[in-house]
Image (cartoon, rainbow, N blue to C red; front, side):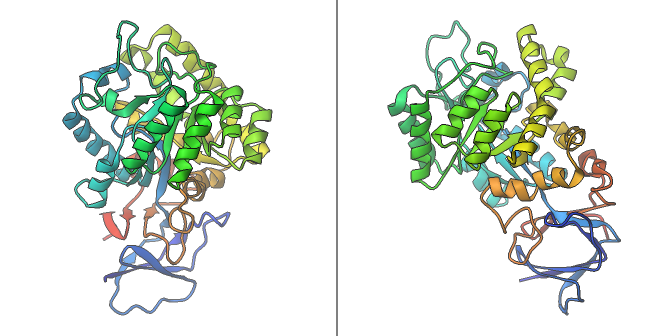
Length: 411
């Protein structure tokens, strides 16, 4: 089992408030074996001189859609699953290039994509999958046009592959059990309207509390959890009462629903960059006036939601939620959050907090013996300049995932 010895770096441990020098780090196989303030004795190890850069955990994005390769959702109807997979490969390579060594897919990616990454068939971050995102008829996952009468076959195009429908407690139980059979790491449900879906208002309530409880019970029976797409306080509160673990988006949250989330020890996975990027390129992608109106509403609430959750004590993880051509903006979320949050809080959102969402504490998002060797080296101190985490990986001379050097220009 090969060893790599990292020297000459500043250590950015999310448990600390600053970058500190004087450490060495030893990787053995796929894990971190030792972190020490004293010289590490490893005579046969390959030495990596970090040239004074910052060594930190690989980044984690808790809200991606690697198979949704079009900004305009309807276009996915014309994409066969073979082409969908090719697009997903390109998407995941880009994420790894940007220093994201782990991602959580919240609708679309399945066990096949995950296995392809694990077996080295695809270069990409380790991926935690939800399978199909599930919603009720007429909700955010109902991709039919108003003239479409029935259900499309999920085996035939990217949109049907990524989205599912269920109505009533019995159907919800069956669909979640199917997701468990398919090896999903978590279950994604839709509990309010969305920007990308043309027919449902943002404040619409989707799934009854009984239906949500059924999803939570079935996921828990397999040791899994439920994450919920929700914007409004009413949808967030319903999710909290029913046992949902994470809220995706949450832009319209208020103090009361945030307090309930804190009481239930829930997480918010925020993703503000998606709305900014869509607004900037709305004309290019033909967003309707109704969609733009909803988009403006969530942009207005985005930064406020971060401030509300910080006051309430709700942990906020990093997400991007970018589709297709907009995924190049994945790292721009750092800059947007910097308007209201400190650099260390933002870094933690993409490392230690994100690891808690994934239930990977001590394994991901940290610098500690026994953790996976998911590491990046940054040219400079990200706590002084968050822009170093942008630039499509330009300022990251080294990216390691699971002990494998994906990129190394330090030699």
